[in-house]
Each structure stands twice: as C-alpha cells, then as structure tokens.
Amino acid sequence: MAKRSVVPFGPQHPVLPEPIHLDLVIEDEKVVEAIPNIGFIHRGLEGLTDKKDFKQMTYVIERTCGICSFGHGLGYVETIEHIMNAEVPDRAKYLRTIWAELARMHSHLLWLGLIADAFGFESLFYQAWRIRERVLDCLELTTGGRLIFSVLEPGGVLRDINSDQEKEILTQLASVKEELRAVEKTFLLDYSVQTRLKGVGVITKEKAHDLGCCGPVARASGLSYDMRKLGYEAYGNLDFEPIISKEGDSYSRCQVRIQEIYQSIDLIRQAFAKMPEGDLAVPVKGNPNGEYFTRIEQPRGEAIYYVKANGTKKLDRFRLRTPTFSNLAGLCEMLKDCEYSDVGILCVTIDPCISCTER
Amino acid sequence: MGIMRFAPTMLRQLFEKPVTKNYPAEPINYPEGSRGHIDIDIQQCISCGACMINCPPGAITVDRKNKTWTINRFDCVQCGYCTRVCPKKCLYLNPGYQTPGPEKVTYSQTHIMTEAEKQKAAEMEARKQAAIKAAQAKKAAAAAAEKKD
Image 1: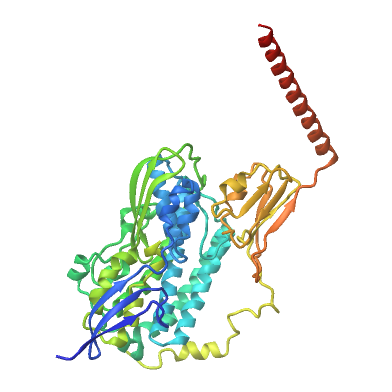
Image 2: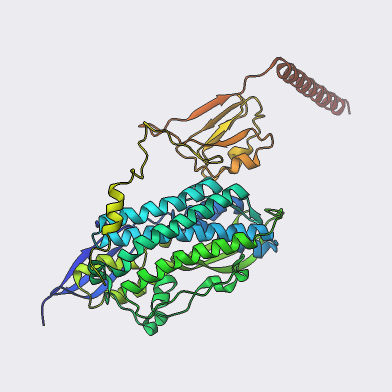
C-alpha cells in the first residue's frame, strides 16, 4: 500500500470561485477521501431578524448571494405571503417567473465560464461571459440592477416590464440562443474538453438520491427532481419537463446546464405570451403571525426557506438551506478515487456557492 | 468528438469589434431606472426621519434639529426602500454609481428655511412657549391652593 498523505486544498486556490477548504487524503495521485470544511465567510444574516423588520429583511436576504439573489428574495417573500394569506396578482407571478428564469440563465452562463476557466480554456471562458452580458443588460433594463434587483416585496413586485422592454428582451434572447449554439459545440463536442469532463466525477443515481443531491447535479445523474414542477408562481401554467441526463459525470452536468439555458429561454417566451394585464402588487397590512416553509428551485438546486413569525414586526426565526449545502455530500462522494488534478474541476461542477451556504 | 471546434468562433472574433467599451473615452449609457445612487430634493424634505428608521443598512442619518440629511454612500445598498417610505416622495434613485474613493466620506444636505417656514416656525415656538408658561402658571396656582388648604 502506498503512503497516504493529507493535502489541504483551498480556501484560496486559483480554480475556486468560493472559499471552501478540503482536506484531501491522497494515495499516490489518487484521492482516497475528502473532508470539507466551511466557515470562512459566515456573516450571520439569519441573526439579523432580531434587528430588522420583516420588510427590511427582504433586502437583507436578497443580498445573501450575488448570483442567486432573486431566488432568495423570491423564496422569502413567498413564505411571508403564505403566512399572511396574501393573494399575489397574476401579472406579478409572471414577472417573477421571467426574472427568475433570466437569473437562472445568467447563473448557468457564469458557471459555463467558470468550468471553462477550471479546465484551462480561457477564451471559452470569455465567450461564455460575453453571452452572459446580454442577459445582465436585460436585467438592468427591467429591474435597474445587474445582479441584485430589489424588485420584490411581500404582496407583489415593484416594477413592470413594458412592451418596448419585452421586445428588447426577446431580441436579446434570440441573440443569446444563436451565440450559445456556437459556443455549445466547443463545450460538448471538442476533444480536449471531453477528455477533461467525460467519465470524471461519476455519481450514480442511487448515490445521488441517498446523499440528497439536488438541482443540476441530481438531474445529471438521472433523478427527475425539479421544484419548479411544484407549480409555484407561474410555473404551473408553463409547459416544461425537467432536463435529465443519465451518466452522472462532469460532462452530463455541463450538458444539463446548457440545455437548461435553452429551457429558460423557452419559459421566458411562454411567460411573455401568457402574461395577463393587471396590478403589480396587493397591499399587505399588519404583521405576520405563524410559520411556513417553502421550497423553490434555484439555479443551483432546491432551496428551503423557513420563517417563524410572532405577530410583531420582527421575525422569530428565519432559516435558509441552500442547494450547495445538499450538494457538498455529493461532492465528497465524487472526489473519492479521482485524480488529484481533477479536484478543482469537480469542485466547480457542483457550482458551489459557499457565501449562500454560510449566510 | 472533434478537434478545432473553437476555431470558427475564434476566427470570427478576430474580425469583430471588441465587445467591451472603450471607457472612459466612450461614455456608459445607463438604462432609465438603473439603481445608481440616492438623491434628495432637500427643500421638500420635512426631516421626519422615516428614511433613517427604515434604511436596511442604516446608511441615512437625519438631524431633525438642524434639518440636515446625511447619507453614507459606501453603506447604501441601493435597495430604494427609503424612496418608497418617504412621505413627501423627495428621495430619488438615480442612475450613475458612486465613485470610488480612498476615504469613506458622507454626503450631506441641509434644508434652508424659506421666509414662510421661518414665520411658521416662529409661530410654533411662540405657541410652545405660551403653552409652557400657562402650564407653569397652572402648576403654581395649584401649589398655592394646596398651601392655603
């Protein structure tokens, strides 16, 4: 038996977008075991419920993460609306769906750039982010913010999308689709990319289920888990099926995310076609009293929001379980028996968002 | 599987204009409604302090006595909550980001009182003084009556 040694990996590493620390037990060049360690950027956002009222908390929770900010805000306001029995207008539901899908697109395009950077394809990284810029422009045009939108409030939304903006978004989406078709070929068909992704970090369907993986990681292993099928907001009226792949390797995870960008484009078009006229928000009076928990599909997977309110302005408890937290167990499973040089790529394939996870 | 899959994209890029803007030679056009920074129409401000109480990061300070409105732009998160809670709607979220700087400077505006406002304030002050005087006189009379008994 070869000698085992422990190599610390992260939190500062050129390939890592987020500060996660892994203790890798190495035997020759193979990883035998990986022990994750987080806790470098804990900010105590859940504890702010003691100091901020429930309306201010909408803005605090949106700022948990820069990439999935809209999803976090959405999960929180949905929970508050359920507690307060607020009936959100249909138009607001469709607008929320459109923004959530635009946010998913920019998150997946960001990930495509990061994975290209991780396997050392710098020009591909720039191409992915060039496409992402179009989506960010659409978001800035309609919400005023590029990453953090602040358009949600308990009871509805604060901004509307007019017909000019709708036309602009649809034109931009057509360009995104066309440009992504060109870049997709490199991601999925290029020889050098395939050698880095195919058969690397395989996680079987059973393992993915047992370890509680979610989002694109679970779907790449063949699990048809998509919280959007629960029909929250306007998803119940839109026609789509979760995109799944069977292999469970890094290549499948890449494939699923690329297909999900096309799916998001389709969902946005459907939502624009079906969006009714009407109010943007209903007034929400009084303070919440009760508890509720919501599940929504973030770009990275299923996120859970729990709120306990006591009838005063300030909440008793807010809890957020992020998709990265569920996928960390899957990551440790993937890292077993992999080459040391693949560790960086595998960390990126789960799309880690440690800022969300630590809150 | 194939090789040179990236070549068409790369070659096209060689003959295209750069995607990035030549900033600052070419100015940035912010879309209407972009969340840049908070501005105030100070003459409309009544120094009620609603923005200070509701600001999530606590970036705004209102001095009611001197009628001064101060914002620490480095703390502001551009959520726009103050613009919604302002009863006079004198706060605006305008395009254009805060310029970076080596020091965390604050931005202050003071409400300058017009003649009518000054007159009103003087009237209010006089009424307040009269009320205080009346209350004191009432108290003294009550004390005197108690002494008599």
